Amino acid sequence: MAPSLPLSSLLVARFLRSNNYTETLDAFIREAGLPSDAGETTEIELSSEPAGADQWTLEGIIQEKKRFDQSLTFERHDESTSAKDQWTSLAPSQPTVVDTPSSTNLLHVSVQPWQRSDKESTSYVVATGADKRLSLFNLDADRTVAVSMMQLSDSPILSHASVCEGRYQFLTGMSGKLLLVQNDEVIDYRKDHSKYTVQVTAYEDQDGHIWIATAGWDAQVLLYRMKIEPSPVIGEPVGAIKLATNPESILITRNPDTQELTLLVSRRDSTHIYFYNLEVLRGANSTTTNNNTTVQCEEIGKQNLAPHSNAWVAFSPSCLALSPHDPGLLAVALSTMPHMKVIIVRLLFPSQQTSTEEQNESASVSQAAQAMAALALQNREDAAIVIQANTFAPQTPYSTPQVVWRPDGSGVWVNGDDGVIRGVEAKTGKVVTMLKNGHEVGSKVRSIWAGWVWSEEDSRKEEWVVSGGFDKRLIVWR
Image (cartoon, rainbow, N blue to C red; front, top):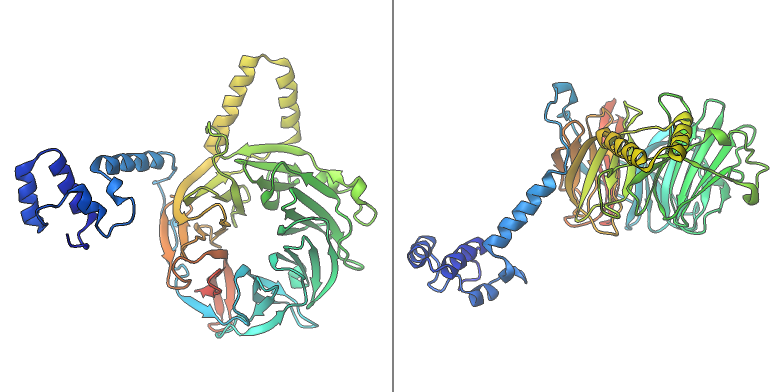
């Protein structure tokens, strides 16, 4: 049999032959131009189809389609959308490959302000690689290299945060160190994590202090509170969070109702987002606190992203991103396989009064009342999920899911292990665009960033997407 015959024709022929539809089989073979022995098992086994293709039958395909349709019922979309909520058409789509100083896997990319020497603060494309190099690229037409530094860290840099309009930078990497950088030099560092420090996030408080949170693969989240004046020093951690598993993502924000500073944490093998109140740490002095007296932060609440699931672990929330226009709306990239799913959820910030009332009620009410209260909480958590959708971005247990908002809030971008960046509409959860022809097909897109950038080439504000991957390419999408 010709090896180029489509598997669909062979399946139909086999179905007709196995059910003794002789006349229909003869007519199908004539009209489809198939050989007389089409549909025999041995012929399918000898075809050019991949290994295991002979196991497929029409019944198997139908059952697979039913399972796929059933999985769609777990997605959540909103079809009733107005024009202002839809994905804006002027989205980045044209890729420009940036020439990097070295050929290495890229681990982190972003556009951040960075003040160098005595110059004014300027935004650069920031990229870190597996060769321990951190490079800054100008936002000009050619994306030229402003500076490339290898002396900052003794290990590859995994995360970066800029504060004070670019005067200071925080870097974390595989050595477990937290670096404080001014200009092009490290002016202070801490090594309180014993393993990879995978993320750092910073928040500038109104009282002149800076909150820094770091997540490490030693199953810890550490909190620092430093004051820039008179001299910037990180100091000892003022708070610590011991987790049962490694943290996946961290985020510092304010409770929209009480304005209390709150830390959001997601961890591996848990479908919850955990809330920690940072206000209790305001009295801690980072210059005098030592590791033996570091405050162990207490969890004030949690929110389940799979409230009605009866599976032990359905997924892990791998990346958290707050909406640029709604402080209570969160986009979450999940560790689901074989494809990434995205949830857009309304945050249910716990209050201290609510937590105390729940503890008092649980100690006095009956078991049936507790079950009813638990069901009510599950329904509330379920109602908070606005969008739950499949992005069809392939990923494995070794993937690093990323989700970033478009600056106008109309949607989110997600990475993938196939070299494609997908745009998901925030209102409907539909994949509306795919950025291709930038990264190599089948390569891992490790990091993405999206936001407004002042284009010196066109002298106007533009929306950019910046991506870096294991194909050693740094791409600017305009």
